[in-house]
Length: 496
Image 1 (cartoon, helix red, strand yellow):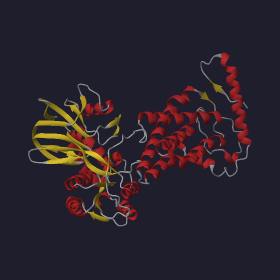
Image 2 (cartoon, rainbow, N blue to C red):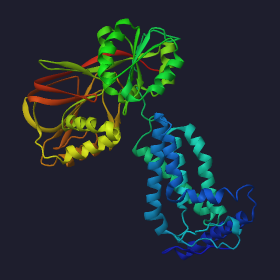
Image 3 (cartoon, rainbow, N blue to C red):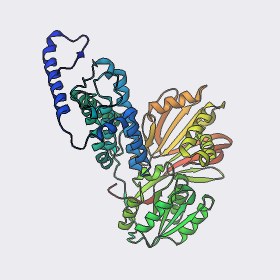
Image 4 (tube, rainbow, N blue to C red):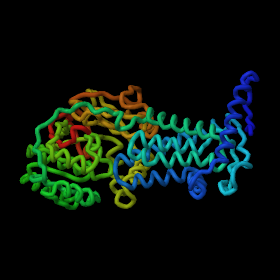
């Protein structure tokens, strides 16, 4: 049986080999219809229906994200992004470019046929494209999860031939498009493995095979009891202190006075407090990620308790930089970022709502409210010139951004402060969005970036909000920022 194909504008001379390929495709379809697929009658039609509108893959992504491992969450997000790109391409270009009729169902046993037959054109297979895109996207981020998802994706693709709704070439073309979409997403947003970390200075740190001498202070509000228990199981002689957020600074001070190694479990604000205690007492720091973002731990290369326990058992550690800010009345450290302008207000709004609706929804709500508010830009003297700014961002180390995705650092001991400025104008939201899209090193009238090791800001109005590592304080007059090279020793698996 030869399928009907309408290729508008195709040259007559090219139709003979094309018709030969289509005839072969038709014969393969008939052979598949006649072939007995053991055990497939109950499985493949249902599997095919479950993949309608990507429902199967969204459910799979949700299950992966529920595992609470960072790599699984990244793999799920990459799989969904790849699926979205493949579906968009299929629906806007693929189906409209080649208007191929669906196969005739006569050779297909009735028990295999779908109750609802698709009404769109046949080439290429959207189900196959989505399946291949999701599985490939997942595998590029996590080969383990990719191996688990791949058999399901293959079965979905094969189900389209089995149920008689696609020719084999439709499935192959759809799968190829899906794989291409996943690699395009990887090109736009590199995987964690592609962001190569430079070799950091290795540091001497105590090896604690059983955790003897390790005191871990855990912020109870972070909901990390399970991770803390797992770390204690791996290092049974470690001391664990769980406390409320308001008690964290006091407990860290007490722990630093008796510990050989100071440990901390919580978000970036809690880690910041632990880093200050570790620097004061000249102690190595062990960081177990336990917050919403965990920028420092993830950029360091520590994603879970297994990696941290392995590093502590073997004494694997590196030295990293810290940033320091100082005013006439106060000073502090920052491990990730410091900012002035709209971001401190965003942090305040986010913290106000995070306990009610969760961290990520609160962050979105805060961004919308802050950017829509009628406000005046911040006035700062920078480089001897007074300038209006919507945002001044200072990173502890150079951040590598990919469009609108969160930035990452590949070197936490580069000796640099990553300074970015979004200048004041009448439309802050537009300028901030343009700065995010353009990337970190773009120079324009609206935004600019530079790397330095010291920065001095003057002329700040009284009680100007300053955000650092998710915390907010008030500053006035003058603020000095400087880099403290290799100020902190931190445990990290050397092969991470």
